[in-house]
Length: 113
Image (cartoon, rainbow, N blue to C red; front, side, top):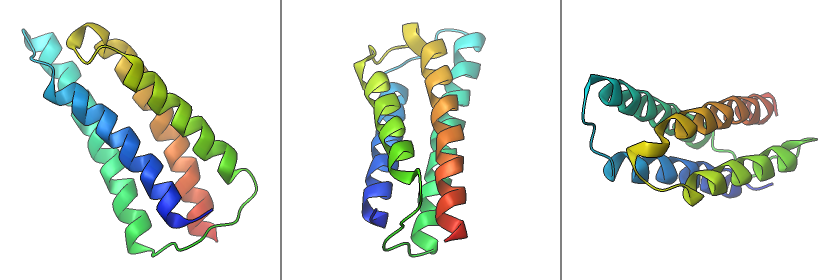
């Protein structure tokens, strides 16, 4: 799997979170805390992108990597299917948490190689 494919999936995930952030206006402190959580998740994904770029992954061949990338794409699709407002923020946070765990395992595989 090419490093550019891995990056594209991470960019897609980060973009989905960014869309939610841009289109949501917190109305109270609780909403603000949830938005900050989503911003932190987006920043975590940005860190993963930077790590892949810094390691100059051109191609990664590892067992299970393609499946993990596919699973990440499915989670991104779930995010993109949601209404981009605060009404789904709890679901967004849950999906992003799953995505970050998956991204962490993707990075671990890629760094080992």
